[in-house]
Amino acid sequence: MTNTIDGFNFDLPLRAEQIIELAHHHRKKLDEAVFHQEIHLGEYCLAQRKRVHDFTSTLDPQQREEFYRIYNGELISIADDDELHPADAEKGVSIFAIFIVLAIVAGIILYTVFRALMT
Image (cartoon, rainbow, N blue to C red; front, side, top):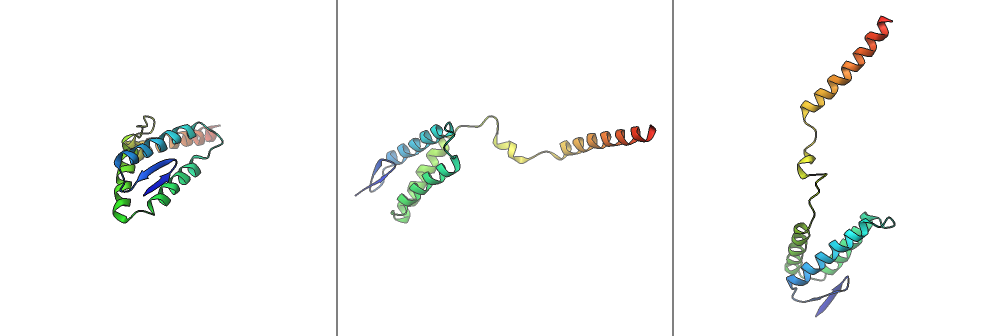
């Protein structure tokens, strides 16, 4: 029995090489879509994910779990590290930085008020 998704034919039982090839194809298509202004990336990714879901819904639970383990694992392994937005940047701003900014703003406000009172 053969199933098709995005032009890839999958043998049942699933073979890891086919799943990895699909993940690379999806990554390549996503990279291409980034540079096309007429493509809305959110809708494109959802449509891609929907096709994968529709395909996996025909599989039994064990095969589905194995498919997603391989597919998601491969997508994670080929993902680019974003140097401009590293993972540790998601922690937020330190409390010390907030107090420094508040002190500067308070200083500017006080300077403006005192200057207005002196004139």
